[in-house]
Length: 326
Image 1 (cartoon, rainbow, N blue to C red):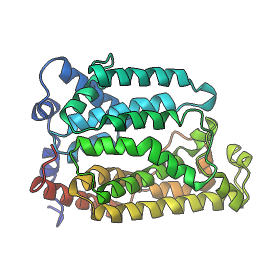
Image 2 (image 1 turned 180 degrees about the vertical axis):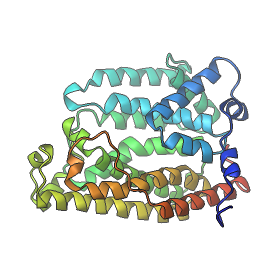
Image 3 (image 1 turned 90 degrees about the vertical axis):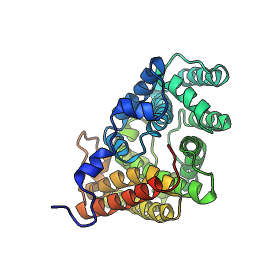
Image 4 (image 1 turned 90 degrees about the horizontal axis):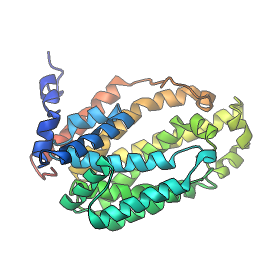
């Protein structure tokens, strides 16, 4: 029996086109280039094992290889930058950045995923200036130990993330209308706030605190209390406020996506749907957010998951009958 309004399972599964056919639909030729795009997809799948199959299910097949190539480029850059402060090696990132800049000129690279990305740049209207801006933004993250104010959080997104968003939107041939860029930025803001909370304990151990110093002062919480994992009323109030800000960011992002082009909705709703399922778990942990754990405490909301997924599929159906982004 089919739930009213929910597409039958066979229709959902049919969207996950076999990978070799996906490559063929994207116009990726046989040989090394296909291997390069496969390497890019595997890099993303290992980094985002939950998000990857969800996007494979929802995104148009002809778009996916290019989308994975751009995402893999960002995943590798983040791997070089997102390391403990005491083990930060700026020279390693800068050397890779020069390799990327050389590839932009020559079209050649040693890394398979990077060759795929460079090929996507030839096929899609990606501005090389955004690649340069992205590399500069990521370099600015090297050795950072924390934020002084809330503005530092926003500056980090504008400098290190928004160039990648513009690359992603160009990959999908999405018009750079203000409503699209605004919706994408708000979605990224919500995702980054969620990630900061989920990784709070690990980041603290690595020497990074993403809760601004001004918030610590407002709640009278010493950084040492967070680093030591102390469970105090002030610490709980600080973390509850951070969770509240994150939940509000999700709502603002969802509302903004309603006004964005369907392609933008398709790209970012999948991320928000999955992360929203983890918000209840984050809020429930309280001061336990300060203690590293291998367990991802998720308290799913089936009703919200169903509602958000149907919302995403409506965007997909509209996209399939309207503008083509593959």
